[in-house]
Image (cartoon, rainbow, N blue to C red):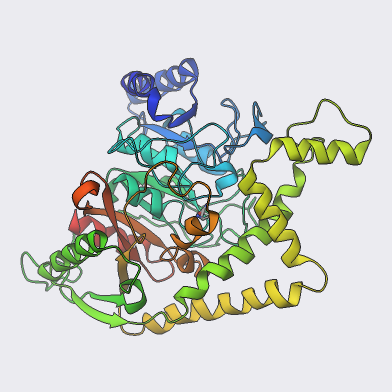
Length: 460
Ligand code: GLN
């Protein structure tokens, strides 16, 4: 813990952390040491972890990257935080993120952008950019993150780390500051799939305090690691029998050549491991952008209504009456992207527009999920790029939100369907982008995380 705290301090230019409290960290570390000395604890006891600032923590302040919550002290720990602490993990601090997890580059944080450790001109991806940069720069061996439409997979891809978004409902949302409740899902980021499996063991599981938490028996996500897919797989070809689906729509125009080359090289390697590649189609992929950018803002506009300066959040210092206080507090506390989403969300939910936008989006969401079910009839996992390009320069898309939304094309439909998805580092861009990582996306069937982690681990 001491070593990581020193590294965090030395790497302040990356702006990966919003909050560190070295005394609290060292106190937890001493507790873990004592536990070990008694011969107690498990594989994660004493291992440091950084938490995305969207998870509330009792002793570290929690902001969700927003001025609205600056200085907020939660009276309780999020379930994810509590579970990892119970597993003996030591909190290093809170990582920077796009405000309320809205964004794909971490430039929407009220606490400034995060730099990509591989190339400090580049964004780390978002919204979990601080967690991704922290793991990439080895400021933390592991981090928590959340994914609503790609925010674990895309920053993992841009920053060259491994991250998994589990099936919706696997990881408790209790204490995770809500963005879009039907999509939000927590998960780990780490240096490898094997590390992610260990973290998921501690994070996942039923929680009665989250009404959408899955009531399923706990499972060991490490159980297939290092094993061949079937007992009769020939030596050196552990993935014999695995059918990898390649969606045509994920390899069309719009995919940059360097990302395509890195992903195709990874697929070759999977063939060498014994897998076969089968073409599949996810015909509604393009619609995932308008559908997501209706549903997510709709839910956000409702979730964010609690930040009124009374129940939660920043309160303006001068106002005429109650309504004026709400207006001024929200105008001052929220950044431009959050305001944009609240406006869009309120509009699509309003009388006369609900049927045309929100209801329509819900129907297409169902069809998007069905597309995956069709594809999974002929393959076991789906693979493709995480994003159409490598990380872009800080500032490059800053004033064009739609450009940013379009870059989410390969991650949104997985979230809309509630499927598990992960990003595994598979190479780098080309030319000027030779320092910028590329991630391979692995999409699994519902509840198939243990298989996905085995498949990712075989590649690593
Ligand atoms: N980039 C998407 C958005 O801005 C996804 C963010 C996320 O997964 N939290 O909404």
